[in-house]
Image (cartoon, rainbow, N blue to C red):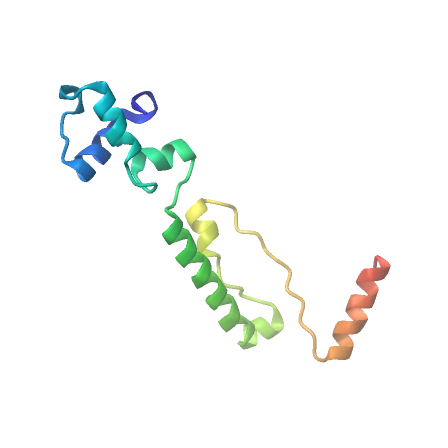
Length: 121
């Protein structure tokens, strides 16, 4: 952990255990304290490659779902324009993809579209 990011480990130990100079402790005790850090601690997130805590990711996903539901029930959603941006994609720093949204006026229109897709068209 020290080789990966000593500053992150130092901050986590100070925040969690009020250990401000871990070098004064025996290495095995520092190792035990390090393993006891929360999964959302700076060092554990860095080791795991996680950029956003799970709770934040989950809340962003819920927000994206609600925004999409509201958008679907709007005039823009019916026309397939001005889709709200994904908060999850913004948090993860991903490129925002323009997802094609297809709307149907009736169940028959949907069935016709589906039939064409199944044929490969």
